Length: 135
Image (cartoon, rainbow, N blue to C red):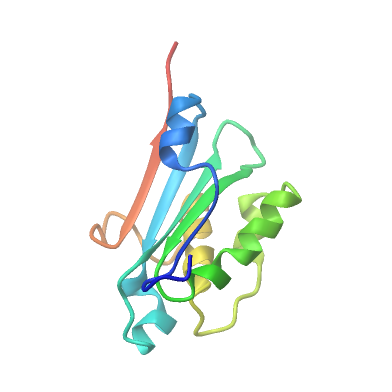
């Protein structure tokens, strides 16, 4: 939706994953750490990426973006979901610098444990969580 700020969504959200009892991981990356958003003075927003954890391929389930350039930020993930790509593939994509899409790449890297930012240090801007179920 082309609002101010923009909102973009594809695939499952956290509630839908919980309702379907789908084990997943969630990473959230605040725009306050995205260099392009900082340069634009538009740091209000976030990127949220969900994926399946019980699959060694870590397939992408969904993504939510709120903030500047959200509509273009979601394009690559949309294509990757259509082609059943892994979060590893997403982490390896080349992103120009500075670009808002770097937030998507860092979300993927957080899920893989390779991000330069650590959620335990930047608690107000980053979140990494796992949703699991027991029978």
